[in-house]
Length: 404
Ligand SMILES: Cc1cc2nc3c(=O)[nH]c(=O)nc-3n(C[C@H](O)[C@H](O)[C@H](O)COP(=O)(O)O)c2cc1C
Image: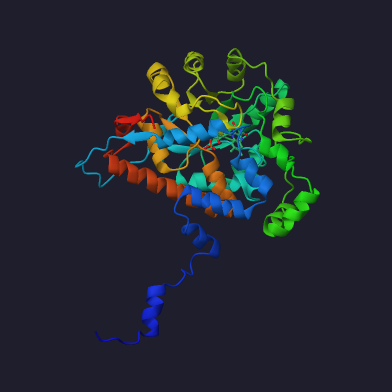
């Protein structure tokens, strides 16, 4: 065998050159293969208390863990030889076409994860053709978000406070700015107990405690951005001392019942979605109230510890109320295959929470975009591999939950 010295140009070709068009941050994100890879990057980017606030759940965190492990039990029966050269990912979500079968769930205090916050997330949602829900606990106001993301389909998530006038004002402001759907979250009679927040001493806004000062050395960029941009505060509520759970308990009205839907209707002309249904009985109750959609959700495991697993409830709920209301689901989504599984079990659409927040922490709007790209590719590939050419074909696909 004769050997030769390689030429420099050949070595360069093999090693590959970084794409100068893409920033260092984008290249780092490009190397993340999965949502969990982005989560690892996020963990390194933000102070621990911020990561834990996002990543954590209530008490033993069993609700979240079980929701995630249910997805691992999913078994599709793939159909083959079905020409899947073209698959259609669009679907109807609450009367409008969404480019993808998922939307971004409402999450509070989003500018804590990254200073670009809600505006960055809503911008990516708009460019991706999917809806974005702004939380009552948002850190960008209803008006500022509609100016930052005028072309995004916007929903407003309402927490009904004891002060009903405040809720009425929020609904009026959202309607005036073209938010088309009210997401009424009902799994928060009181705030959940989240050990990580207590242990980390997380307050809203984050206080410059001794621990936080030590954290500055580890995450100077996060702190620089937090201290040199608009101060972190709730855009629609007064901030308070204590954890988010304490805040929720102080402002939320635990007396809310189905009868309040009539009051909401008298202040909101748009569509209504009830989020936080955790039983077949309540799904039936909500559908009978005449709302447009329900979302099976346990708040990503952040409220009740050891609640029902949304995916396990889904088939029964769809068979009971699927012809009356659209049925959405959330909790524990970490891949496009999880999304396809929800659709296969009968969901009309899926909400994604932490996944996009991991992207936001890892790299602002670029990170959120990376998450959309990963999820989209995984949804499309899974559809092709199970032989489903459209979302409605996914909904007819054969699927089951294995015992182990
Ligand atoms: C950091 C964080 C903040 C949240 N804040 C809210 C909120 O303000 N209002 C709400 O209705 N749900 C809120 N949720 C719940 C989400 O809307 C959604 O139900 C949940 O994140 C879905 O689970 P996943 O994160 O595993 O996708 C929050 C979730 C997280 C992770």
